Every structure is written in C-alpha cells, then in structure tokens.
Image (cartoon, rainbow, N blue to C red; front, side, top):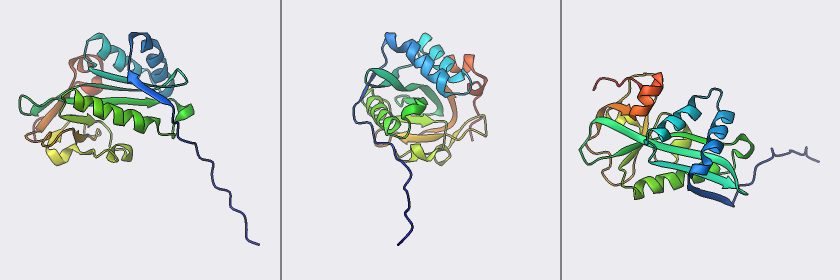
Length: 193
C-alpha cells in the first residue's frame, strides 16, 4: 500500500457573481471594503478623492448574494508623448474581499472592466504593478513602450484595448490631478526618456 496524499483544499469558483457599475449607494461599502483589505486607508481615500473630483470614469463592483465583495476603479492617465485622440486609464485599485479571494472574482471583475473601458472608447490601460495576475490579460511592461514614471520602484504595465492603441506613446506618465493633489506617490512625473 502506498501512502495516501491529501490534496490541499481548493475554493470553488463563484459562478453567481453580479458585476455592475458602482452606484451612489455603494460608496460606503466600497470604502469599507478597501479599508478592510489594505493595511492603510490610502486606497479607500484614493477612490473617495477621485470620485469627489469627478475623475472616476469607470468604477465597478462585484456582489455575491447581494453583498459587495469586490471593486475596481479606473482613472485618467496622461502620457507625455501621445496622439491627441488617444485616451488611457489607470486600473487601480482592484480589490477582492479576503473571504472570497482565489475564486475568480478578481479575474471576472478585471475582464468586465477591460470590456467597459474598450466600449467607453479608451485606447489603453496602465497598472502600477507587474504581478503575474495582470500578465494573463496581456499587460506588458511599460518600458517596452518608452513609458516612464518618477518612482523607479513602481513598475508600470500597459495593455492596448484596440489595435494600435499604444502607437505613438512614450515619455512621462502622470495620473489624475485629484491623485497628484492627494497622494505623494502620484505627484511627480518622470522626465521623458
């Protein structure tokens, strides 16, 4: 007889998740979710500041059994060298309640956000994170496209939402003015390479 090996438990994917645009009545729940997931209130404050400034063109929530368990927000970005008609968004933060993490909610929410951004006429998305999670959607290092950010510890990844959506991009990346005014991490832009 062989030794029995127990496989680690796995979480079943959640099939009944409702994804929709954030509504005014969701604001407190979004703030509470962000405050509960992150070590500091910075992400919750970031979303509140963007919303108050009218610089949150896309904000989605995920609900399971009517309970808000996930959120993703998208805010405007500017690239120093970009054709006038090209528009991009920063995908940040993407948040999933720890109790349901690992069950496909973040993936589902991200996919829906990518679709909504594309339908909204945006050309590209940026993320301040090189995590393998974002690579599965096709995000590539921003340095491949000549994108630069003031903080060398921040790695930008970028995704074209339409063919040629990254053509002509390069140089310093700046984030929504509300973020630059609120958070030191968003203030400076790197000089063009």
